[in-house]
Length: 92
Image (cartoon, rainbow, N blue to C red; front, side, top):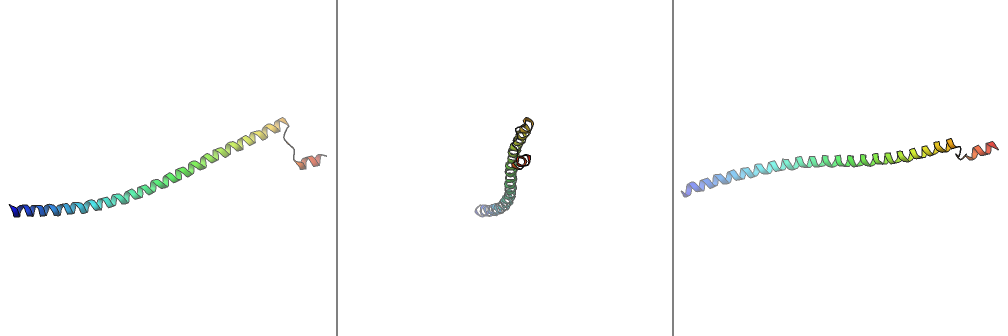
């Protein structure tokens, strides 16, 4: 019984070593895959943040431009638009 159990433990040890090596290989490939996915996600978040910033600034600048344009149209229609110096000097 002693030799049989020793051989059984030996075979069990070899199986566990093989399982450990296979688990290490699988974990390595999972780590590589997760690293690639993490890099891609980081890039997507960077692009999302950059585009969000640019779009918000575009709308803010567009709103300011629209307000200035509306003011210019309003002053032209009211006849209160300030005349430039060249126009004033030509008219006198």
